[in-house]
Image 1: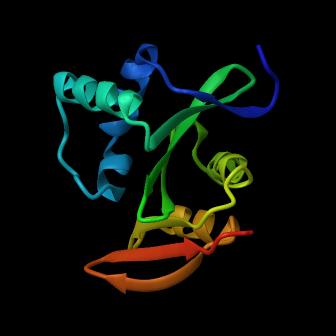
Image 2: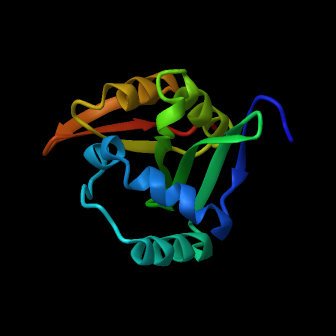
Amino acid sequence: MEKGLYLRPATLEDAEILFEWRNDPQVRAASHNQAEISFEDHLAWLDGSLANPNRKLYIAEEDGISVGTIRSDWAENAYTLSWTVSPEARGKGVGKRMVLLLVKQIREPIRAEVKVGNLASMKISQGVGMQLDYIKNGVMYFSRKDLR
């Protein structure tokens, strides 16, 4: 068991905890798709995500306990990031530390789409070096240019 916060690749064995986090009311409120999803649909999504070469899905663990997830999707010459912090780990700075771990590995441009009102994710986006580009239809669009 590793100490401190680290990211490990997600696997199908993470299906249950990812499903719980995805259907958490706060997560749904901050998501583009706010509907509760079935476990069957979630498994199909996870299976497709793990097979997608342009998507990387990680579980953040702290002292051996799963505390969140972060995803990067490569498209249009940039990585779009998306993250979720477990209900038990919220308000402890886990989100920013988790996103920073991934961002430090990325030299290419990064983006994030954050719903207006999601102050935690807005602060995380800014805290990892992204800037607000614009707001449209209730979504804040953040980006950081490449670091080459």
